[in-house]
Image (cartoon, rainbow over all chains, first blue to last red):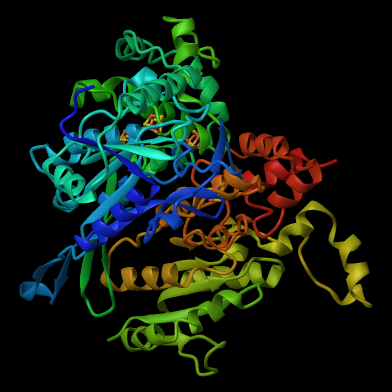
Length: 380
Length: 255
Ligand code: SF4
Ligand code: SF4
Ligand code: SF4
Ligand code: SF4
């Protein structure tokens, strides 16, 4: 396999990588165990990484287990995506001071240090690609996202242990790392010992790799990587049939399945907030007693009544219409807007839905009775 | 002239009024911005109405209070209820599920002295309410936000979506999904900042039903993860027992 630059690293290579990123002024975040889940957290040494920790995921359920596996990255995505670092759940857009004709707009500067993600998964890399298109490349790029994203360093780790909720193979986003990384790592724990193949995907990645050292990647290690990815693909049991999916959903807006799912759906919004590509936000203008004001931005969800509120009330008052908005945006109308799906197959919305609603199952149910329109309430 | 603010107590524990006193630093700024015309928890000096803003704590449990709340409404420009008692009848609405006679005898030596209604009801069952602050007790940030917004003449920023969204915003790992704990967050209104889940304690619903609470589906799931029917009933029948969505669900699990 011909790569721009690739080296084989020992486990000490990860330690060196963490040190090197700190030396370059990055705030390094990586997978850490907190509150019973693997979530992004500060990584100051490879000892902070979840060695031998595995996740057991199914619709509405997530549990961690540990064994003596030396792997640092033998788990799939957790509840918190990297989105939160680049597009924070809450941010102040600007402040004002003074009142009446004396009002001054005070811009809010982002003073966060550039962030390095060590251990993003391939689907998350794809999700960043989608957010780049939505928030970064639009007519009005989001300044906070764009600045943080441009400064960010992304080291992706290819997947050796997908969860039963993952379906990245269906979406073409994993388990191998696609484009857009600075560094791509593949963790090998075969007979050759605990090693990492590291590939550079950008000029910054290239310079990091040059500093990291390591040795040339022997053919046996490439073979081991190929086998690992093949095993991961084979292990992925969940599928989303994407053939004509956008059109399928678009012509089934009155399908009775939407009523069925609405009976189960809590309208809690968890799915939208764990999704690494959901980008909706709301603005709140608040003031304090002195008259100073702030415009605040917070994550919003199309499961909220307030999301579609216009004069006279919400447009989507039923849970049916709100679940349908979510699913059709992810899998259908996103194509019209951004020319891709809005879903990367990470499975978060399936695992972290308190009642385990599965977007792949809902789509499959509609496909199985394409064109059905009679609603449970008897309406056509 | 500064706008006048009055604070009223009905059947309640005073916890929400204490939340106002708890605002400490901000309370001084509030006191400078409004004339606190009646707040007996703080001062026995009172000023006659009418009042620009009234904060009302507590539920209606006596015929006299049912009259008094009308007078308070008459005398108030904007009426803000504070807490679960005022919003849904509070914990004392447990009486709604039985008879006062059966309870009074087990608590009081001389129940014949009691003069009380059969039910504990929300303020909004008696008079129009302009703003409802939920919680047992209310959240001090929401309380200050409501007062500040009213003084500025803007709409207060009060969420009506689920507590789950506050968990996700603050990065709290879901107790239900990751630990199998029975949590009312998906059916409960945000506003506390997901306080309990952030402290490893599942939400017990003190803010009452969220805007589109699907309690039936949540209850089914709670059963699947191990909660018994009586545990589910108990979850829905606490501080907001008489909130219609919660009441319906707890009754569905009556043995
Ligand atoms: S829709 Fe679900 S599976 Fe797809 S990217 Fe979002 S959270 Fe992941
Ligand atoms: S699915 Fe809903 S929350 Fe997510 S991006 Fe689309 S409209 Fe926004
Ligand atoms: S699909 Fe699940 S996570 Fe999403 S709003 Fe419905 S119940 Fe909540
Ligand atoms: S802990 Fe409770 S409130 Fe928080 S996300 Fe989970 S179910 Fe919702």
